Length: 426
Image (tube, helix red, strand yellow):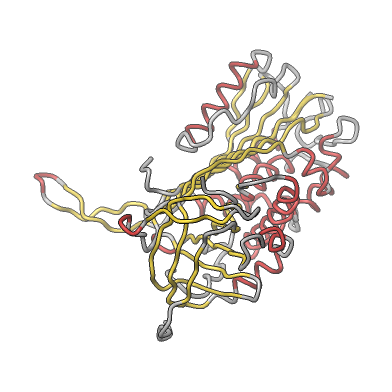
């Protein structure tokens, strides 16, 4: 990876066991069913973030989209009260067939980045025009099943057709080898940004199915920061202390909005298909108070208030990862039966024996610098036995030198691919 490039990455794992440059963000152009999936995913993601933010300390980063997709594949095999709880928690409002098809359409959109024309060397050394992706965005799913286990044909075909998840058989009794196979797949899908997603001991001879989702994103900013303008400066920690960190600087036209409590900036990536939104509390210790106001309804309201402004931006370079076991959080949000060996109903997957979710593991990585962003995430669900106005004479000043919340959003669909907070860039 170019050290100057920002990359967000996310992965979600579930296992089942026995027992534009500025202004207002682009409105979604997706079909109504896809919009319903996106709106539900964003609402779920913000609720999950709020729960994690109240428990986790320091930096926090996750991919709501990765977790939502991995759980949607699992939901395809849920029935009865288990399915009802999952639908409510995940904000699923469509009938199952429409829901799966909408996820399929969304994934196809993500996996078809816009192309741009560049000049490249052709035959005989002549320069020729070549179409290349403007950025890297890919989403991949996979099913890892116990060897010769009798899963329902309808479930396997649905997940393959709508989520692109082919079924691979593994001998889970050989847990170390099975774990390595899945972790290697995740690493490959995320350009080695997510490694060792499944920890030792998470897979056992009782594991029947592992569902994985991996998302990878890498792009340059539409307007890069000049490296020569980066200089060490003070970062104000929430407790009142200071740290010295590299701060990037630039002035340009960006989407901007503000309230009495916070400022917000929209920074587009190359081609304008994705944006980073930064929500900066006015007070250095104002992050916790801002996070309490972060809801799906408020986010939609704020996104409609961005306007093009000349902005003088100060932003730190940063890179970190986060990892979570989400069982307790998802149960607290309402889908407790899925983790209960007695209550879980995944009879849409198999009727051979009762299955329940033994673990939902999520890991995400982000790196931000002068060039752009790189991010990746992975989720695993393990089954046991979301016309420019005239520039003002004075630019707005956006100095991100204290903790803030940030999100990476797909403009065409409105899907929040990544969401996090930066408490300390070091």
